[in-house]
Length: 497
Length: 67
Ligand code: HEM
Image (cartoon, rainbow over all chains, first blue to last red; front, side, top):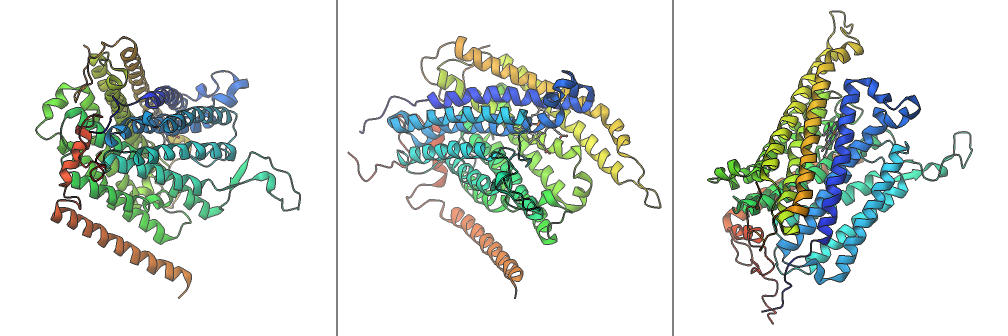
């Protein structure tokens, strides 16, 4: 028998658990502020007109999206990789001091990059491309962080004791490769310092500010190929990686069909990349590309539901566990919300539906039933499952977790139902016209009608944030005051009352 | 034929090719049930369920070079 280490090393996983929680709080707090700014515009200048530059909606919005995507979600991806990766490959990261060093380096560089992002976005320094707002020096730092992640991933895979790669590892690899490709192509940019004006002047721009290398429609196409696939490889693929590990492990049930997981993987990889065109329906993009975007969006239901149904069927005959454990509730509702938003998205991608939905709040509702109900729930469930194993203590409180679950579920429901009503109302009002083609309403009419729904969304968001704070507290107490565990639990995570 | 036509035909051909490949892969998975190493695909779920550092791997990497 070869020598095996005694356990796994979770140092780096714990570091990223911390940023997941901290950046989750920051990002969601900003989201709640934004929601109330839309409902009550005076909040835009709440700190006085002198500071209005920093508190207005448009300055804070990219901070929200980037904090929750690149802060909360990507930290969650890192944290779970450094946990799941070791376990399913059966190798301790500490067996390689180099990998340990690179993992910590990745973390610290990530923290520095996040700080740079926060400061620059607050200062209003941005490339103005959605989800790609960072200027080129920050982009370069992000590339280094990502390369370190990749080196670690493939380093660990290279040292593995388990020859086959578990399905989650496939999804993590796809996350790494997908984001690397998307990020590089969409962020091709030229510093404005190098530009020449029409009159022939040079050296008029700045060294840090840059513009996209693509122009016009091409830029839009690359941008939404990126934007949509950021949803694919940031919000879907790594989260599927998580559920394929954490749900079977927590429930002690083998995946319903491992074969289905394999073919859903390839289906997803094949179809997702072509669906981005649905963001540009009725724009100047060639018509066939728009149609392709719609068709592939609808086909996308199949591989998405393949994974989601596989997860629900994993619980077959074990539904009493869903009733008994709030942790499993999070995951089962998460995969239900995944099914729900992967049905809603394709519906919105149908041209005639999109004609009403585009630019309205229905899109924002769709985004958030996915990210709050699926991404957020799954990441919190993953961290809850990891906590007793990495801290070697019982989860502090089951009842707190259960209340959190219900508060947040209510929050998500309030969020997306209010946005559905708001969005469809908006879409219908914008189109309404009289028999001569004159518009029936002016823009402000829609704003007045939407006010109550914006307020409801704000309340829903606030409930979700409160739940997230309960989660943070529960993890903190687990770490500091949870009952110490003698040995690692095999499946169901032990919880205090 | 100009470049746009070529792109369109190429695109169509690739789509057909990848669709056929995907279905062939599905057929292959369900027909053979086992992979080249002789493991039933369903056994691989155990990689997550038995993931202690001391657990026996489903498909150990050191099979042929056992010490
Ligand atoms: C407390 C919870 C949250 C609240 C109250 C909230 C609120 C908001 C608001 C008000 C907007 C701007 C909508 C607009 O421009 O009309 C927004 C946009 C967005 N949020 Fe959130 N958010 C929350 C959590 C999250 C989370 C956890 C994620 C991702 C993991 C997320 C991802 C996004 C994205 C991607 C957009 C851009 C949507 C688009 O451009 O269509 N949000 N959010």
